[in-house]
Length: 414
Image (tube, rainbow, N blue to C red; front, side, top):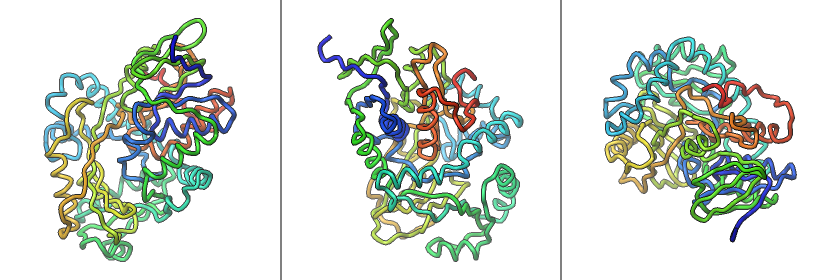
């Protein structure tokens, strides 16, 4: 076949997860080819809040979310909303999500997430050092902000639960928040400070360094879209526009675009799409020292290099619809509630997160055969879990027993 590329391992997807996997496998001497239709790291790996969130062990689905789910989904101003036109297609996913909001399931999912994120910060510190990105990773913690005393009181049980699962957190009053972040307006409640969290002042630059490091270690890069995956007696065939690849093994790390490929590999995965947004204001003088999340509004105020990024909210709505002007307007209004002197936004962005009903990623060998390994569905913590996911995938290929229990992430759970 003309143009056929042969390789040992093909990694579909060159976001931060796929890049971290390719880098790790190349370091171990594996022959790896990355496949992506876009430049590496240009999807959600570019547009995120930049947090390495060792505290992010609460699933999206909780009993409190279930109690308010109708209001959350159908209120256009909710931090968690749904595009009405997408509701019929989303119905099966929403049923699964509602089940995962029940108390026992939510606690089980939180415990599994806590196990995954517990050492995210030192893992990223080691990786950033190895790829020349140490100056991009800042170790100043992250903040949750509570705009009223009522919100602060309501958060105390959640923070106690996080402490029980090993998260370092300090509850701060308004004066203590003002001392940490004098650029913020006075808060009626206070905040929760996560001192062990880190953040990237330019996640895109970090991902580009990771891509360069993977290629320097010998990984290949093929620009193209994989539409079909099929097994043969002599391996796997991947094809699509610009792609004709024969691989001995395949990693599906295509984020929100992974569901169809998973099905072709023999796995029915309940993956759907969250549409995430950000706005940026160019700002040579930082307004904040660390990412700060007004929890009731569902976004992060992120001090990026040379700009302020306001990133977040969850909109369930698929891959094809254009950006929602209303969601962008809500982000802008929320940012101005904290910084009224902001001018017009310098730029806006929308990207796609892969969303699984239990908020756990899908990591592990396919039910259709161990020649396909899944590595997607990380939701809001793909950046956080990239180094760990890469280690787990490398362990799978090498036949090593993983040091981390990832049984809760296996595709066989569905």
